[in-house]
Amino acid sequence: MTSDALDIRPILAVPQNSSDGWQTLSEEDRFDFFQSLPRGEASELFLSLSAADQEALVSALPVSERRVWLRLLAPDDAADLIQLAREEERDGLLGLLVPRTRIEVEALLEYQADVAGGRMNPSYAWVRPEMTAAQAQAYVRLQAADRISMVYYSYVLDRDERLLGVVSFRELMTAPAHRPVSEIMLRDPVCVAEDLDQEAVAQILAEHDLLAVPVVDAGGHMKGIITVDDVIDVVQQEATEDIQKIGGSEALTLPYFRTRPAEMLRKRAGWLSLLFLSEMLTATAMGFFEHEIEAAVVLAVFVPLVISSGGNSGSQASTLVIRAMALGEVRLRDWWRVVRRELGFGLSLGAILATIGAIRITVWQGIFGSYGDHAFQLAMTVSLSLVGVVAWGTMVGSMLPLALRRAGFDPANASAPFVATLCDVTGLVIYFSVAKLILLNSL
Image 1: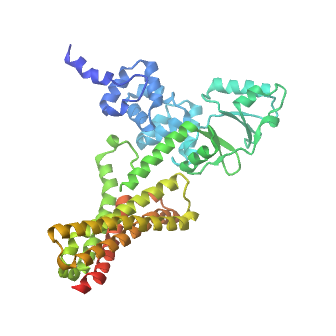
Image 2: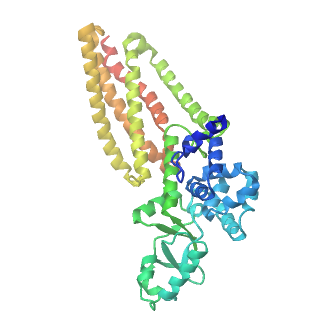
Image 3: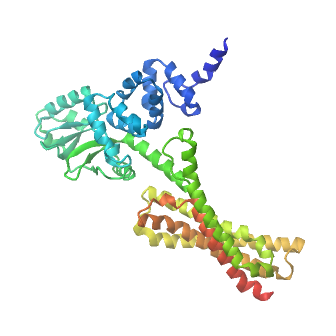
């Protein structure tokens, strides 16, 4: 067996007719594997990939081959691919599309990528209200044979393309042949505005258990549809962005390995620098309590324990609230319920940690005599500080996402590192203030 054959074997190990092992391949190996597939299997794999992976493949192909793969995509998928391409290549990719598809794709590119208009598919089945069921059936079959791959519903439009109602394919097929569409359609169907955020669209589809939802403009004119498979992509994208932001980084627009080092550095350095500057306040707070530390050096031993507990509780609360907001479980008007609930949790969690801290100090004092005559006062200081710091951290972590949403920002920007840093500074103030009242006055 030749060395060339050995080089190909890892590539051919990827399951064919599936993208399960696609992410394990390097970008170069992906291209080689894709080129080695028969046309039918390559088409199936190509359609199953994300827009970012499709764009990477198309950009690596010779110009003469790009036309075939671009024309395989639905207009909304082609728009997603072109939007990810380099700006200087977009016009060339648009020129490879058939005229009708190009017009639709150009219209989609006018929208922002994260709104309903940018996500919709302009190809859908439609009928007129005056058609009989038999006429509508024949017309839907004609549309499906032309270019519509999935027929979930038929949308009923007037002569001005305004949405009047919707009829499911099943209802259309089972209705008496002579019955007019206007009598079997559902009037005033659920629809979304063309400028509605994609995350809100996903929530509407899930809430009403729909397979597709129509997109309309301000005048009620039908513009396209968003299907449930589009929503799966939206949910994955939004969850990925939220996780990256919660981790203290700007959201990546491309997959990890396709993000240029300079872009990755920029997206991570900004937040990290801001967090570093914020942590400088911790040093300032420590300097402010310098005399207290000199009077009782043992206080410094418990600084990491106390302030990290506040940061951990705050990060925990912010993550829970951000996720609840994303799922629609918590809204701005629920802020007072969140305050009461998290205050109770914060005090309870603080009491649990305070008990553990007091036991630790008592045991060490009994075995090693580590804290001298003021072990009881030290235990009280650490315990009360933990209750205050954890309760405060929980409140900050739960309220910050709501405050950001109220100010018009993404709640996910209340990242765990940011909350932890904020709690570190305030935790020091709480800790040394309690120490000043209980421990230092007895020295």
